[in-house]
Length: 378
Image 1 (spheres, rainbow, N blue to C red):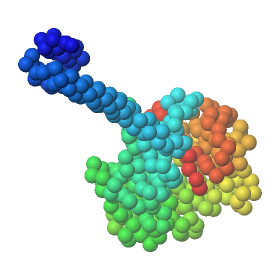
Image 2: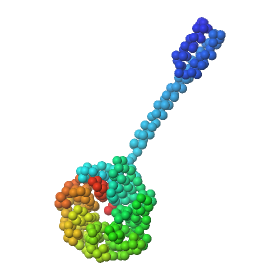
Image 3: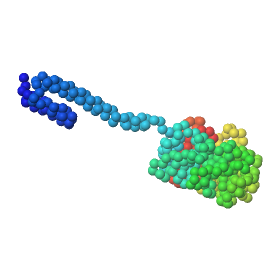
Image 4: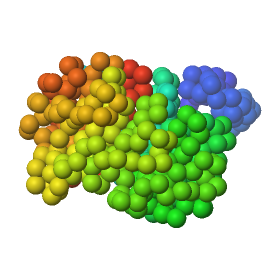
């Protein structure tokens, strides 16, 4: 049988070695004194051993819980990373169309985009759910929505002081720079089926609608119906020369848009009429009977008076969807993808193919950057 003093030293030593970090355990050990009888020694020792086992179990549970808790952020991060991100909506090229990067991340899922437009470094997407934009010059740009404009947006157009956006069948709006506010311009407009907007250098505003061309010289306060023969797709301007892609062909005006004459006929509707280096470019349906012939591409170097075919090399394409110029390159979106020409349209090479017959690319140029948005519909 252990001596009282020896027993006391044994218990104290045992608990100091096993429980040095736990001051509560050491405090319990010190209640054992040499004056306690032998039976009490054994009972206390037994209780302390049981207590030690319970403490050890609790510590293991805490360590296990700690490991579980420390793993939760990783699981949450993994879960976040596994969430689907928006892709295959808009692509960007910074090397003249040679390579393309998907820059759709940050857009809403299943966004229905109809057009892309560039104003300086800002890229705008017209969609069924409103207008989205981002600054392409930033290292990590974010897509933002114009909260004040909740209408369906079908297209975006430049103005002398701010942008215009159209909402087909609802009219069109003008943005007040720096405010996020868009004011309606169609209150006095007879036809709300706005497809195109042009503001000239003298402040006149033209809109192209299903019923023709309307002109305002008082900021949209009143409108004059200056052309009523057929509907309008788009506008282009160079000085005093105004061009308009119409349902029956290409129109031209040199008197401030008061009168219009047909300069490119017998090829169906004219569309994607744009100003390029050295002249104009436009596309046509290719026939008065739509879908009977491939689309055609024309350029003019004499202010729109005469036009020459420039679609050699696009023979495999049936439909032309958009045209843009970036530096010395012309880009053309067709039913086979995006093609590029380095010689003014004499020859073309396919740089971004796609095979989805229900989708098509529309183009925008921001400095040296080219943007292509994949859309449904026309």
